[in-house]
Image (tube, rainbow, N blue to C red; front, side, top):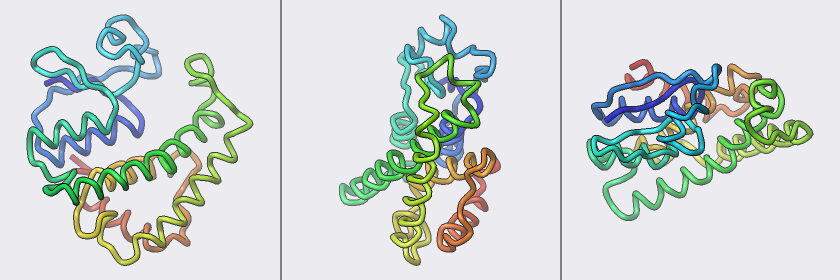
Length: 202
């Protein structure tokens, strides 16, 4: 398998998932800044021009970070989603909540503000929405801080794709002016636990 990847939180999610599952992939770097992801050879793999993209040995290409991570999990360790229908449902529930309410709002808050010069010629940007998107993200993080209670991870004692996605985007947010509020003490402690995992520095 080949993983076409580059900079940003989406590729980071899959990089961590690769390390967690022990999947064997050949990593191919694609230059996002130079727009290599919008060139014909990459668009043939991923018509949306996105990163990352996983090319299977058969030649089939899979994009979207949740689909890639779930595929890698299914063909290797099988621990990131769950081993029972109930565990898988719980993981999917939290992945969707985190993706829609935190990852998307944080990323678009950046794209429409600090990152606008990079993205304005590539996607439709809405600069007037940036502050509201950032606030939605902060509000959801505050809500999540209460919801996780004293859990070790988002899904209790199970480390899952939900943890990977949240960590990768909070890590990104810290570098682009959207740090995690120190008042979110449970999430701060959770972040430290995840940061100590070997997959984070792999």
